[in-house]
Length: 101
Image (cartoon, rainbow, N blue to C red; front, top):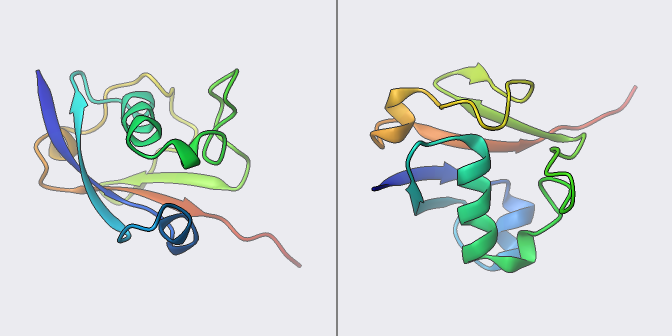
């Protein structure tokens, strides 16, 4: 079983893969961060290694993940995401963080 998941990516990544920032992808259940990223990397191979390490699957330091107004960046990557994401009612957001001083 799959679900149509709404995803928002940073404009820099949208330019890289030549797509709009807002995507809809079919993702197999259960809907987890890893499954969404797997679907993104399958659909857009140029994203491999940009969001997470290809070998370890650990997120890159300046990448954050948000769903339903919550920062899920430090949650386990295989934890089920909120039902609103799985139902397509809310957007799974990928955000690039900015460091500076």
